[in-house]
Length: 345
Image (tube, rainbow, N blue to C red; front, top):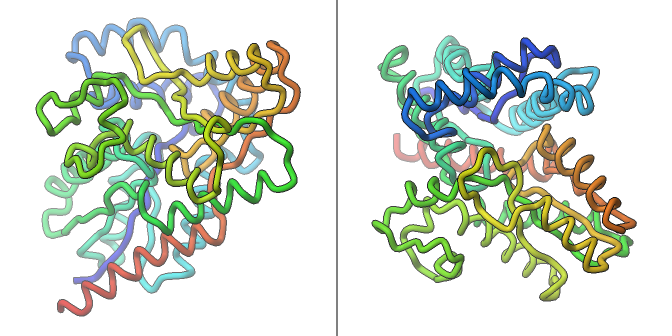
């Protein structure tokens, strides 16, 4: 078989025009793995309420972070793709789960190059039904419908791969070097608590109290987003030698009124400022590419909250983006896959 790779990230509107933002949000929020309620309720919520109120606000937020080259997430993903492709011997494509740079076109491009076996790499360190799962489910549907002779494989969540932890830790250390900070906050994208329960393969063992996240050897951890976030923090803290009490984990970007993973990032930032923390840094390890959630929600809104409650110095640590060592890691995963497959032929 001829091998190829498809890197897949979240996606972005084509522009900051409210019409483009509305189109993007419609596709994103109508995904049953993002808002996992019955179709009638999702349609009422998204098309009847959200798409009539949110696009203008979101468009204004996108304008704050938009680059001359376009969407930061798209630009940074393209830069990573190029670097990875330069380090491998097989075709490396790029697609987004939502938006114009779609997975079908990505698979088609590889197919046109003669690729018959594709390794999909969801650019999410931790597994979640609203990220990794929705990518893989759609990819399989597209394969069955349009590319029946194509074989698809994927890389599992890489939150605990030593090489990923090394790169993440190095990035954080470089940004904290010579920085006088009191607390490092690890902020992960939030998900509804019901998503954790739906991904629980232990049939109800998860009590949502955080305790089982730290138990060793549990099979449910393979699909538990909360566990994988907590372990990312633990492994990085150990690698960097962080002292207890100088770092913590929180979750951002909640939507609606259902319970989401806690503690919430915005409230955590506010609490720390009120408790007398004057200098804090924040990193967002659920993302590998800077985007609206990191550049606007965390870097801008988060800093505003911190300053409003008395905080003085607020440092945002960039995502891995197109770091050379991160491109090396992704390329090594690909080259190892190619080598194993070649030996089996």
